[in-house]
Length: 452
Image (cartoon, rainbow, N blue to C red; front, top):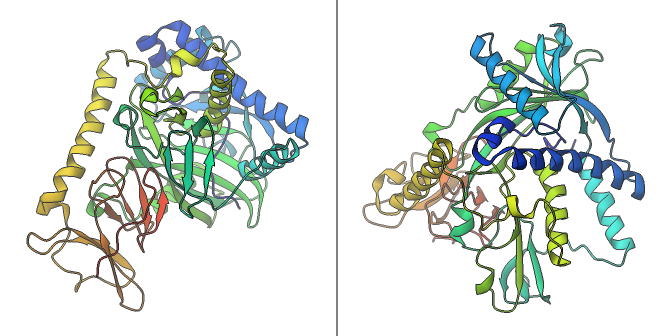
């Protein structure tokens, strides 16, 4: 099974009513148009290119986290805002409260969402690009982009007047971008479920962070219920991470869908949440400093990367062709965020995490112990002896210690150990490294520095 929670949802998980309150009805309407376009465009591409990725329209359902009147009031707000934004078919429904729908009765239904296999879809896109004379190069990590030159870690280079950073988070060090979003770890569990044990569709609750649930048919371990949730800020200290996250996520799923059985797959991922609810698609804010190259970025689409990819592709391709599309302004990376309590709180969150990452360089609080002698096998930690630099240590199953600098090569913050996926993660901008210090998640472009 592909380990992805990707789905195409019509609901924007930063809430239409909040977007409207902060930016106005015109913007919330355009956001809804973008979601509708993203879903239908995947279907259009599948039909035109003959991509068999299991694309299927399904209904999405936003349901209350509890039976308090305030929870239903929130849903009513979102329903009304969705209707005002042009989603006239969004409505209240009664799902009946059966086991196959997680015991849910009243919910707000968003018709014409869609499920698909993102890996098969991407494979189909790669074939379509090749068919049109394009080329896709895998295992070609970019080390540097300067002017019109892109250089890989193998030393190969490409000359191009236009560079698009569709890299989840841009690999440059531009704080005009990195300070506009923050990284979050997310967790996913797929549980085996018998035929009829779960209704087809998508289900989202109003918890914070929320649970996203859907049915996945025909994995290598049979039909599954897929649940995503338990998000937290990337790079928090290991003692702040719940070691039972996967089990608790599975227990939550079984409490709502009782026929969900054994865990078939479990994994973690990462998203980048924008401070002002809208993703960043378009020209890099510091484009004038990139010499004679024109740089574009696509980032900050929170947990809706598959929809975001469609919108970003449309916005950026129009700009490259000299066209100004209807969504360019609201997604512009150089835009000013509107003043609001939530946005100021999110900005404070970014500043706090970044500050902590730098303070940990000098502070003993950034380390878990003074040496690695007490570390159990197959575990890691940040250690510091006296005033010496902090070290990221992993002890393998043979008891061998693997030591690397704990300083992230992106912008110099101190990484932290995650006991769940056994990796080192940066709290500032989300770079991730495996237990042996190898880069697995940008925006860093190099490994942690080995320490003898």
